[in-house]
Image (tube, rainbow, N blue to C red; front, side, top):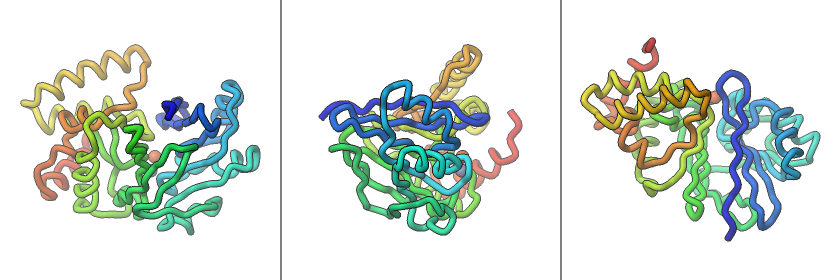
Length: 244
Ligand code: ZN
Ligand code: FE
């Protein structure tokens, strides 16, 4: 099976849209199109035709491009069943354990609620790739808009258990702010200190810090590293008001 081509498209102020192409089948899907124009332009530039749109959750900065991409390409929208009412463009609704194909590549749907009530993660186990939307970020996690600390803690534990080499494609460039908070949350963690220095350099050069990996997150993500729901909740609340 050929390797997936995964292209990062920066959108809005800090969103990342992922264009995912399977060379063998020629199929191309887009994860969380905040907007349509840069996605259609990048696909055209590469000679790819978008065959599906996959949403992790309903927020407009993840679904805003659905309608226009559908209009332009006829691509169906795959979206979490629990958020069907909030994603009127959805064509196929998915839930825990469902599989979604890109050519012969198989993604399993993991329900990862808390940022939104129906948020899902798409995990390509054979490719060691996960699209985590606004659940797991590089050195961070999503805010708890529609769920509890216990739910997000469980998400962190579950994602931490994926193979360490798994590449994590999240939907925002929040790493610098997350790294500064991580340094405060775990002042004695040398891996966090080193990654903060690295992230500072990368951002100064205007480079993206995503994708990350499960191994790197296990070493440096204070939310994934929280030892209990209570510690997770305390860290999440502190980060909500953190000004680094
Ligand atoms: Zn969101
Ligand atoms: Fe978002």
